Image (cartoon, rainbow, N blue to C red):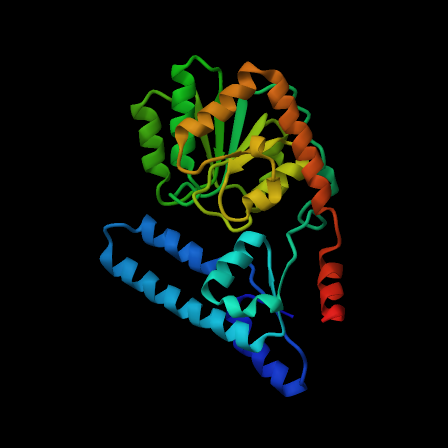
Length: 290
């Protein structure tokens, strides 16, 4: 079993050496990630060219995996269909095993630490560049403040755009509504006091932060991109990407109608049950059936 393109050729060598079958697992959607990088580097022609060449390289990897692997795994249906849109003839070799909630990352001490009953404090965890969509969340908070909604955003994460984000907040008088905490080695304590986790990604293959929120009991809403709909499923927990108005409306509904907020908590608690399984055992099951 091999995870990730960087180990592909070592896996193929071992397959030949010991005459074994090869299970190859894609841990992310590299082609979609690289396409997002092109957007993030708009105006930088050299960087965009380099990224385009990387995309061609990974598409080559995808074809080799399709031809040489005996079974190909993905984290979400979105990633599988994205792959098959480029190499459709390998569908019979593919399967999906989602990420799960288990030790050691999802420690028992953080299970259900969130017991919030109303919505005021929002939590964002991730890089502050374009890909994670924080710009649109900041704009959504600005809209909510203009509508006299009492909200506060705690943003955990860093990146090269951190200072420009802070500058926007200062220029628009949002210092009392948005606080940046910078990079943190352990995100779990921040879930305890958050009323709602917001994941406004422009693309995300399978974000850990959504599973982390479910583990802690914190309700979470997220953009309808990548593998996120596979995790959350319910329309009430999803919104359209790159749309500050859609984010603000979803949050505003939960503020004005507390029952909507409590319903989101219930839906998230139900979704968590879907990720309480033995991840390694699922791989073994598929390998035995192959």
